[in-house]
Length: 207
Image 1 (cartoon, helix red, strand yellow):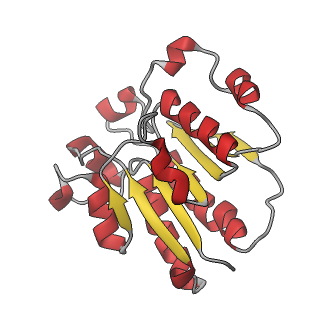
Image 2 (tube, rainbow, N blue to C red):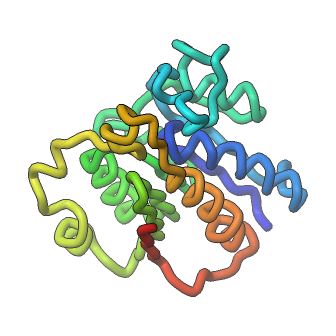
């Protein structure tokens, strides 16, 4: 296996767990020296992130920047930054991108960038009891994905969350974010590290 550079975009409900699982997988399968990992996020740890352990943070992490907390804990690199049109070129050095973001505008930006640059993209999603993954199909173009994901202006302007507001208010935390993070790393991305193709490039489920 050749040296691989991996960017983790977002360090919240899904990717805070992705970081943990990726660290585990790299150790278990002795690939630490073959994979460089850098985390990108600008958000700080809030009290709601700790509710029922829904994100991979502790009380002592409150008000600290998520990317920095996780990078220090697992020995990865980090940048306290959100990926935007102005700085998306920061991703040029990376071979693989694992995305777990809470808004479609950023998601579309990353899809378009990865199509143009022919990057591997694993898009992990969860909301309430719904979970999904999508591996970018580089035989498609952005028009295909615009029709598939990005054609609803209301959704494009809305910031999402792994936890529904009513579930947070009622202390009824769901765990779809943890499920898709584990599956995304231990099943889908491990195949990538092994040079294998998964049986499907997309999957979604609701429980």
